[in-house]
Image 1 (cartoon, rainbow, N blue to C red):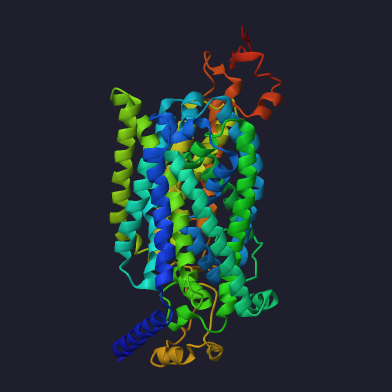
Image 2 (cartoon, rainbow, N blue to C red; image 1 turned 45 degrees about the vertical axis):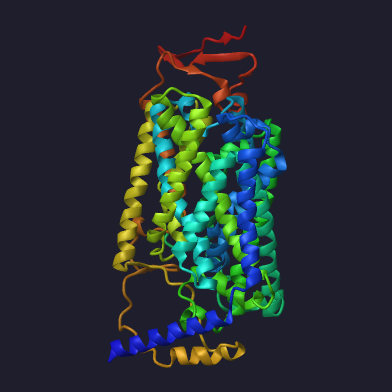
Length: 610
């Protein structure tokens, strides 16, 4: 009896979704807008690949000969942070778990000074084009290889997700097979990335960023008007608990203010300042002042668009307060809410759904193309160049082939991504394996002169292995039901205010009720826990900070056990400017000096520049 009721419920929910899909259609003009965006991206690749008067060198392909302009680079950096995940999954996160995610957006404010005054000056002083070069100069080749390998593995895990999310949105509003869409768009992305290099990546980002800003603002404004104004949005959100914030210290709470803010600092620092896909663009600018201005502009752009995107989730909740399409079975999961919402508020405007879908694809393409370009460079220079006779022509050919191979891999791997339950949570968890450790190692190198290669290698390995162990155990607890992140409650008691009232009534008429258990189970939820504390049950938003903390907590004590060797040299260029000032060392007057102890006394021998 129960199975027949469940089957009936499933059938009705399916027919509900089909009815909604028929109501919200993707018209001819929408297809024209979408195809125009793809053709424009491909056209830029063709231009820089065949018609632009530039040299066929690796410096040109990867860095635009260090002649890029500040504003396009800043816009490109913004676009690369606003992947399809941000456009689709961040509103879903705020819809399901409240507006606390805005504190992760706020953290970008503190990240810019870290980048501009600690990290970027070191890269420019050492003429760094690949950020992992710094690790070899500061420590050794072994440390560079470990961090590079983590970047490559991370990219291989993330690239299929970046492009799958917009394919999910397109499939939601058109009904076209999701893997077919994935294949077409991946092919176009690898086409223009392969042909045009960094210049094609940056200029397609500029076009795509314009589409993203237009779409995000339109969705937010039209959604607010549809609800009845900003005051009504805030009223509905407050009633639904979406404006409640947790300021406590329990690390098991999924979205606490402290975990989001501190985790955001680690995330933005790692993603913008210490990820090769972004560093490659930052150092393609002709001077450090250009880079600093670009990063300030980037922070404003990220703050504005990510803040707007986060608030869109609140607008979305206010629109469906009392009539949740997910609870009704009309929408499968929160990650698919955004296309439904856009069709609801903008479906009657010809071409606007096409603009939104173009926005989501633009965000994904900008992130994917940047990662493909930088990944090709890292793999070539770290893993291929040492074993072949290098020429620029041969290097460019190999990197282009690699772009095609990775694009093909993304198409195939989309099959696995389809099974993820929460895409944003999956993304943050995957990147947390190494992001905190990488941020910790770079900052150690730039801020703590006494820490040397052996210490860093042990600390780095310990951090990555520990985070991997914590994450695997956490996923096992998710699977067993010990951790259960159910969203904030929603209802269907106000559906008369919406056009699909009768549909939802039918969709819920046969759903069986489940009696409440007599005793509350021991479980860690998104908002509380009645279990004994376990590090395996902490929120995934803490992972990056913990990874960085392990590196520092291990390296500092070990640096007093494994003391610097007598022949270790201090090179002022490898440290942040204010560290040199603290040590009262002028980098223009001094080249290096040994850091060593003799008979309990510090021996400092200075070699002056000639």
